[in-house]
Length: 65
Image 1: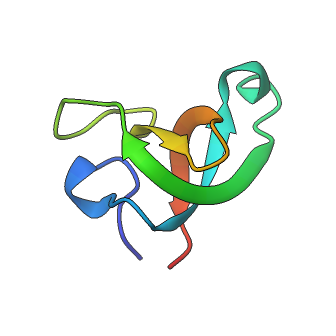
Image 2: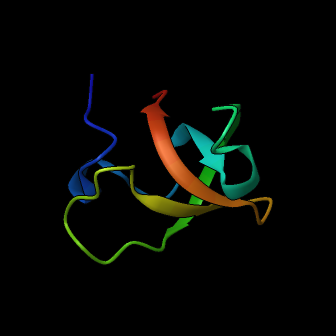
């Protein structure tokens, strides 16, 4: 399983589970396809921030494919 906290593992077109800003307290996950990566640093303790193809922004919790 790829580490979702490492930017090198995240690519546009990947199917991922993210946690949206408003869902951080509950931990509710949203599934989608990565459009672009918003985090510049190579790693982030809470997950790499991405924009999904539908426009939602959140931090990657799981890489599904």
